[in-house]
Image 1: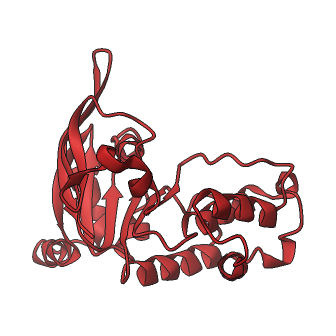
Image 2 (image 1 turned 90 degrees about the vertical axis):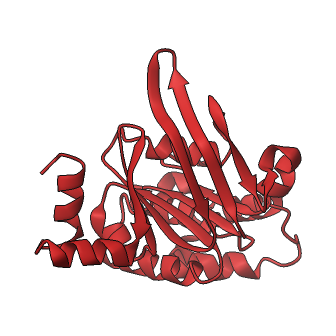
Length: 240
């Protein structure tokens, strides 16, 4: 279950968004933590192959993902930062549609029911998405990302629009998922990764500033008598 990105760079004209990012992901929860504009979304889009890198390669189990793109896509669940839905669909119809696109068994929709219950949308599953609030749409986006139990789960700013109770339930989902798959979670909210991630990549201005297991950061916090990960992160990114 090894995903590897090697020297990923992205330029738009003369503007460099990513600079030679390399990382191995092999199970567990990886947090991409950084301020807005750090390059997190661009990196996730490249890993999801919805955006092409200017340079670098993506390999899964030591094979270039572009050699079998359909096979790679079948293993990836993805929640983009801004997800679009067919708003004339009901929540349930949208989930069925995504289930079919991912190659799911048309006769077995049990997982759809389970996921809608998990994100607290089952009672409104037959309502049109046009009637959903922003938070409800975000929860639907989270649910579709988990369809077909992907091996790689990519989540870009997933807690935006969620209330405290919904955030807590989502974090439980992430912790459970990390036991069985590779989860890459992008956020600028320190608590999102502090409570869920096994590893954290701190990003700023298109670069990875630090890349360590959570235990490393906890030791730095203790040794430097800091109040928590947020203080360390703000110092590291020069935001204090």
